[in-house]
Length: 326
Image (cartoon, rainbow, N blue to C red; front, side, top):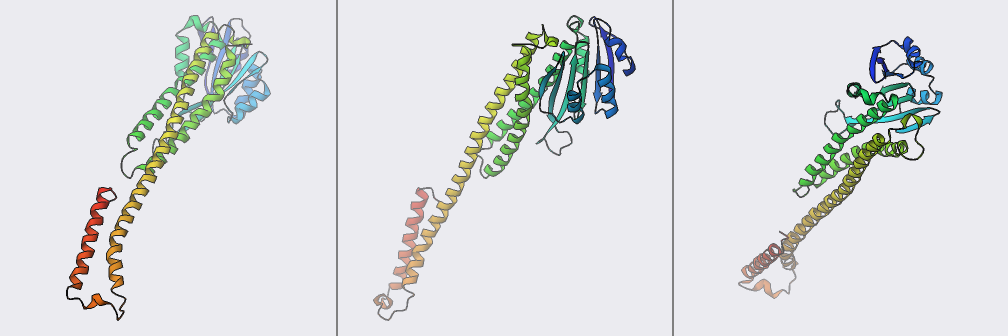
């Protein structure tokens, strides 16, 4: 559906217009049109493609809405597929991330945004750009930067939440009987981290081409702005790599804790087995019922054997306690 369709001139809003009026404003000098769509129909996309003269391949990508993050150049226009990442509000717990997509068509005198599967609107971007008329004079290139910057800024709370959750899990690493649940939580955290990584890395590579080397005509003069976006992406990328290393270490420590716990159980069982083995062995010897066993006729044989078993077990018990096997 159509969210908004606004015409701007010389850095200021002219009017909210209908889709049928787009071609009239696009043809004016120093004027550009910003259209925002949400889950558009085929007819909506066909209308916009006709009004703005969009490249068929870019339109096809926007229709499907399942693109890898990228920025592609088509003549004097650009097409960008950007991923949004936010906590899944529909999930029973906060262990999932919801991903969406915002496709952006940018031309010399127009900007078209198409949202798919995301609650992240661009009202804040519109308010920000309209409040900076001197920058808005730069036209669609500046709005394009503002859209990317807005999406990238929303990655920071996600990475902060992941770091906080990792710290909480690390505090439980050495708690008794918590290793297995910690590993499950760490793997769930790793999955969410990879979702964010898949949104960041391709976009970082694409954004790097907007301020260095041959810069697209639409982005001319905006190099410092896109470099700022690239720096933000690089910071998030560094944070992701740091968390991945910490995750690997935490998983290894938890696996070690599981092995240690199993070793402690094995030691305890071995100690009790040794303690039980002494009276079992003695009782087994005197239970063989051979005729020629002189100890069977000793007057104090029974209490002597019982005493030997008790003393041996006490010694073994104290020895294993000293070794901390019990």
